[in-house]
Length: 403
Image (cartoon, rainbow, N blue to C red):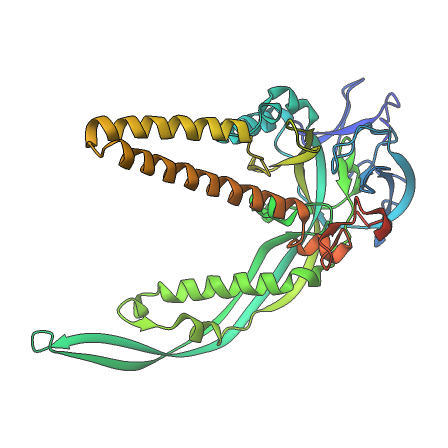
């Protein structure tokens, strides 16, 4: 808790004011003006209050002393057990600039496009369940200094197309540059797919970290090392360089083999900087008839307002819409195209089968998302056992996970 110097109440970070603000007396302070004992020291860690969910083992950080009656990761409603711990101190932080009101607009826009999402998720009363959480991210700085040499071709015909000629040329160029602002979340609790879906953040707006920015919000713990995503960063940089070269005016008239150019490019990671990013996060526990409980997650970028979530498909809605579409198409083809009853029925049945396949593909994608089997952060932090495909948060035999 950061005490107001005038009245002793709690100072919390105000998104509208971009300062610490006392609701009781209206005092405003810069986050860098108010410090706790030890905050001003040059330290690699800082003291935080850790709330551990007894249901799933997920951990969140709070600069406030009050307990929390929710768990953002499993959606469980519970008083979370707390303890004091030292955490690795981030170098930078991007403060929240989108309010919960802005978050509500992003939520409505996201669910408005999801026609077959269950009504329990689209209910606007869920907006109050959004919590502002700072998620730790690795912000990578990489560089490239390579010489690219590749064979390129130009094909042309002569004598009315009877003969085709291919001219080969050596293409050479030097690449020298740096790439900043490539980010991956440093939390095993936060889905990589969800993290990537709400990206990017404008890292040029990052400010030096001080714990007072967290006052009034929660934060996730960093438990994924920067080395986990280094290959992904190198791959992104390589793809960007190849795309840029392929669009270069000097290559537009030639055919080049992409893999040969890629083989010449070798990016290097200069450093990875731990940065706190703002995310509005919500978990919704729901269940369809005859199905087990399920938790869906929605995240909103607290800087840009970009929203994403693992929105499930309500089977009843989907089947009803598919059946209506099949009937409409059957009638349209029978009365206008004159295919005949049998042919129209066959086409309608084929469309129903295709709709079923699309449904199961979507469900498979969502299940893969929720299992975390392909999530590097969850696997690296021990949240998911990749060999068994089990979620360590719910598999108590796997031991208490890092959050």
